[in-house]
Image (tube, rainbow over all chains, first blue to last red; front, side):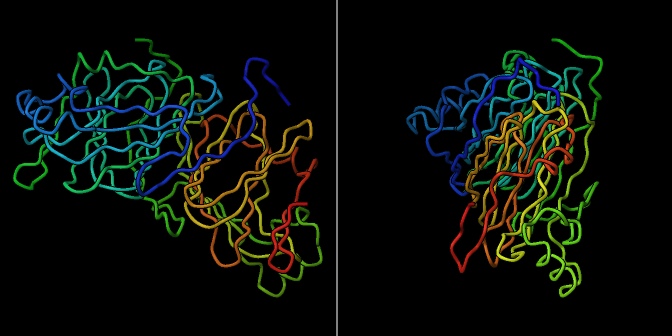
Length: 192
Length: 192
């Protein structure tokens, strides 16, 4: 049996997740993005400023994870919760990112809510997949990805797994932008 | 941005899972293990033969997966359902395996039922982690792993993710065996 001497040995462990509320007990890391962290991402910048002012910079999305060694062979995981809401008439969304090690994929299992995973490749190709409880989305290597909550009441909750050494690259997609945005126009979801 | 020329490019896709019944719609691969496939694994071989005869070789567990390229950077996933029951007084379990690329981990998210993940390292170390809805178990690189259903009514349903190039090694753990077995002795769960 082949034993690589570069992989950090760790003990097995268990983590308690609240699958209905999107909470990890005793997380190693708890990322919170508020509306003010989303400046530059929505089409209607004025509406975002109004949201920040009138609702005291509300929580936009949060991600719980408990790190393992950032090495090939290990796997990272998180549970994420994206609030429902609109900026103007654009649905709440995450910033989105490429992986720094760009040839790595990611798996999203939707546990609650309704929305889309929007994905973009460096050459400009764009795809989206429906997210709803029980739907799993495969984000292949090389695709930037962002989730969008198209519901009006419920949070969009997902369980995600990715190679522990994948890293994040927010900068490139922030500059490029995703070719598609998702709007709620008087109750009709439009991908434009 | 670094583009490896060895990673197979595939399109994003979505998969529908029934999280309550442990079913994948239109799976690429559907593995079924019946009681007769488990010969040699349980302590009470006579009780297993009786189960096979009297219950017409019942389904023991099943695994649905839809393959992606078996390469570093891609991730495989499955939903698995382990039936409840006893062989003598030993709880129903999976065969268990190491990964062929042994320095790769695996993530199990328990969606329904109750049981344990039993894990063993080549040096004989053994650990177990509780599985119950919302519990996630991290199986680190180098650990063989087997799930055990300690419930009497409900299937044990898990969603699993692992590196797509990890492969399976059933042979070594079949020879070695796991140091711990789990029994239901008149309603009391015992790990012996």
